[in-house]
Image 1 (cartoon, protein in one colour):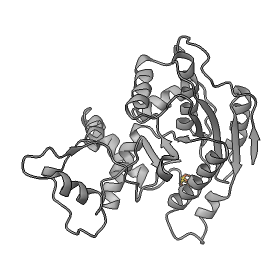
Image 2 (cartoon, helix red, strand yellow; image 1 turned 90 degrees about the horizontal axis):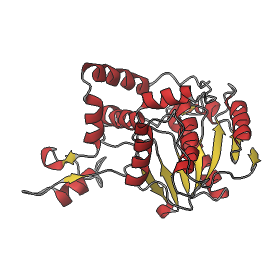
Image 3 (cartoon, protein in one colour; image 1 turned 90 degrees about the vertical axis):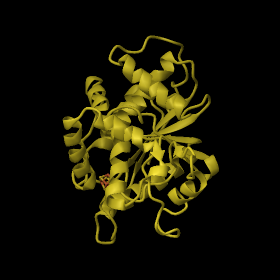
Image 4 (cartoon, protein in one colour; image 1 turned 45 degrees about the vertical axis):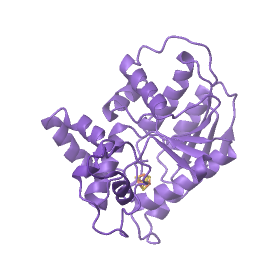
Length: 300
Ligand code: SF4
């Protein structure tokens, strides 16, 4: 475990123009997610989970850049939980954090190999992400952070929703803001409104030190299958992507059958909502959901 605090330079440094590489749309969507979902408040200390992939690196970079043009005050701590496959991500990140002056912590684990060993009878990603989440929560608490920022973008939200529906039999996903322990710790996803291709484009333009995952499960599994299927649908009709995202927070219970088994899976969520809200002439739309994903673990 390594800890370094080369000066927390991440307070508001006064307003200055956003870098040219950041288009208006990106700034707008980042700000919209932060305001609309109430993700960041003044005084927050935020642990940013950085895997070494493009999404989380861009998130860290954007959250720091934002402090230069928005009159907000929050501090950032970069946290990397190394899954133990090697591959050079820890080394590249250590250099990057030092060079950029990010307060950071790097934690070595054996989560990845353990998740792929015979000891594990579950899906490797399920166990690996559960172990990583525990370490992230502990590290955030130790470092005095009340929020953990994850790099999931809009396509991750859509894919998780589709995976849970197709293979978990449940309409649930990952949400932009998710409180734990009675709100003492809040997981936030500030890239929730940014498209995956935009994230990829920006990470490339900024020349962020992205490292390819050395995990054998990184390019296999249901997520990849669902991604390819979605891409084919998007290619056939440009509105499909936006429509799926909109549908996730625009549920019309009047036109969905009530659950067959009141005590079965999903009871306490959709059934409760249906019983509370569905009725003749009632407006049964609701927005958002705090249901945890039961399958289709989020990507690293
Ligand atoms: S793909 Fe990610 S979550 Fe899944 S086992 Fe590999 S490192 Fe863990």
